[in-house]
Image 1 (spheres, rainbow, N blue to C red):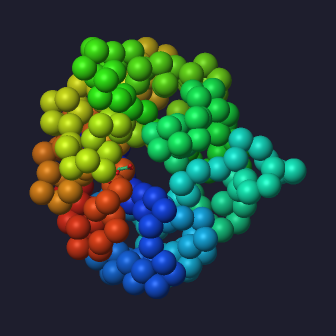
Image 2: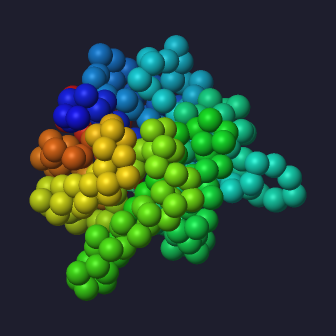
Length: 255
Ligand code: PGA
């Protein structure tokens, strides 16, 4: 399947940033700027602002969607501090990140936990955006594909290849996140092609359809060359999603 038939997706991961006022202003500015865009645009604020951001999106363009940064592996019960997939659906979420490298590092989330969260998201009716990526040491040791495909295989094993009909994959090299050092288009395209080939090995159809997005210091001035790569279907944007003008600049590049 050609890239044109996979609708690009630009997702803004605010991480633990912002305030109610900022969430309102930023969402309104993005909403105004994305009309008639040929891409899906997802805002991923911290949990406490999900309702506010969802409200400020409406009357929503159908390609403007809400996402959350994480969810519990559990569906309900005695798990203080956790948030279930069903609760995120109640708040209007369509998407949820699973396995962001900051969760893997700060909260010791293993590939198995990430796979369990991926399945919890789908049980609730959410589309998981599963994040994969190698550290600088792993890249320098020539282990990039091994690490990234190992992370992917854990999800395929647990959830089955059909589950990727309702999922997005994000490749985010850990060394490029928040560092200002982005992967070159060649480096990114090469890993994206490996990811797609792995899905194709399991199902040619799903491999052609699944959207694989890139994250790691994407800015308006480098977005075009990254997003035009054959196997790159959009971006997961951190720092540059906190300002309407830079986020919208990246959205424009995804046309
Ligand atoms: P960055 O973050 O754009 O600030 O590098 C990307 C991410 O962590 O999703």
